[in-house]
Image 1 (cartoon, rainbow, N blue to C red):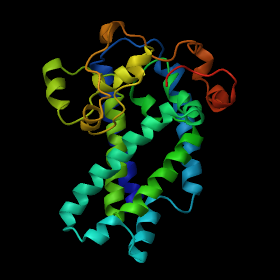
Image 2: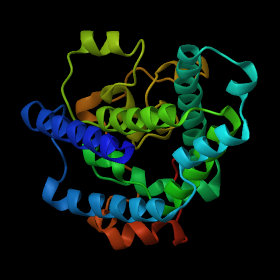
Image 3: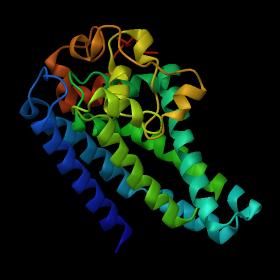
Image 4: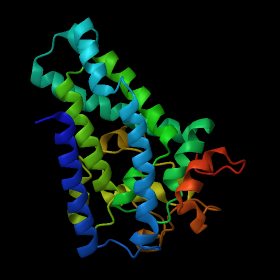
Length: 265
């Protein structure tokens, strides 16, 4: 199957499963409605994807180029294919963790990441809500990581599908029994774990940066187990940015260029 078609199939399947799960067993009531949020959240991901598709040097192309040139750490180490594949997933997930950290700690980057955090709720659509400039910067970081590591084209296709699927899962407004959630957290970032990162409380928003593996937050001491007010009472978003205007696509696109800055750092 064509890699792009395979990724799209996995994306749509995961999205439909998560959207259905949210409808049948929501974790918490939403402030807004899907009708008020989803069209604009999908509009901004459409713009971002259009820009990415126009880029000639996407991660798979970078992987092919690195292989032709013999570049990359994995080629130098001459690891067995299964070991190299596992190392690829671990390394790229770690790159995503530090990239997310940078988008909170660096002022210029933080302006663009604000678009993700001012969503009034957290659900599967929030997983796509990123400013196009952030998407392009993230793409550049990912390409640099692919060239440095020398991953196989198949490995990057797998990781891209894994990343989008895990983002939809950990942003899902879904009910998972606490005992099961505790077990999953030993390995994966769960929705309850990631939701804390979207808290209006600064100390909580400065934690739980991981997207797939939960290990990095524990290893680098950025892990928060539970929100201070509990999941039912915690406030989502960014203080001072609660206006419904920030749900609109035009305001999302212009938000990083406004003088007012947000406090999630």
